[in-house]
Length: 472
Image 1: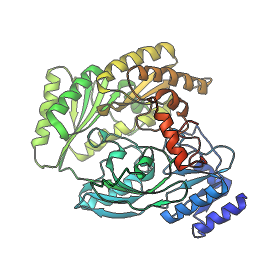
Image 2: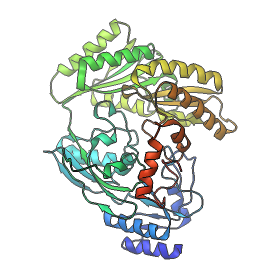
Image 3: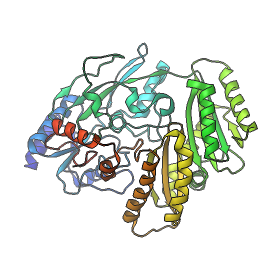
Image 4: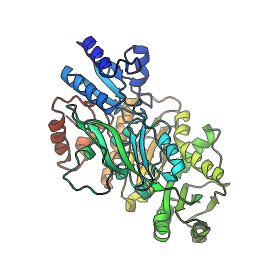
């Protein structure tokens, strides 16, 4: 049966050798997750080049009763696009669907296929003086379809929201192979509920996103970036409120790093250079931007930072004096995950808290997790401006026995605390397979059943990314 299916899949995608990969040594890299902790065995890797080919692949797999897993740049951290070990699931890799179909500087819209990387879209927008307001460290490999299917966030979510907030319309394929044509490029379209938008954040369990119309903004005329040392998280949150009150929409990013996270980057990443001379408990990378050229924005930023130093909220500050210096500050922030990985075992958690609770949560979490798990050091950083923290635990010794048990235990303990503070165990990484057991226990009453109803209606055979996101 599988031989017949593979032949049909290859024919449906035009017979190109690049369209279907079946050799085990060639499919193996697609079956390994970005963290290297999960290794699945795909039956094959289908690489369609159009929405019509995606629809054909979906119909063929549905008819054969074969599970289908969509995959973008494979930079996810929750096992959402990793097949099982049985060799009976087809990976649908969308990297060949990488055309930018149109750029509209009047309507501030780009239409890009699902396989376009974030970096490629941003490069194409440069001549048009437009920006896709979405920023993540993996922008060179993360693809449009992947960031939408996980509703990814990033450091620009403070001002522009998550991936969902940038979408004007989608083109997609439903689990039965029905194509939702598009994407529509309208700011307003009140013609019933938007079926395609159900797929944003659904990680492929309701269908395949093949293209999207995304909202753009004019490229800022002025940008000011500052790296700040602060005494504690209370000061950081007071500063955030003051900056939002006094800078308004011009506050574009507010990233926070605790000292252990920064120290690991400085230790292991050669390009990571200290921005401040002293040591501080908390560091913040703050950025303002404005469409209006001139010195007013820098004067405002310098005034706000100066006032924060005078009142004791900020202990030390460095302002970027050039684009190169700005890039160095952001490179320092983006080097934090690499510093962790080179140090050794790191248990990663992606959480969200209500902003008023953030500082209090961090104090309590640090105290309780250190007491329960003395073999780990909390390594915390993230998008504090919107309440999103990457609250990680770094092993204090090179080898830690029984890693899987410890990962399960620490998640349980940390997420119980997150629940107590009214937060979420997944802020931007998604659910995938890694956090499936937490969905049932930690989401709002009725939400899981509603997800099951939608899943059964669109995919009654459970062939679209089976075993992800929606508990059985």
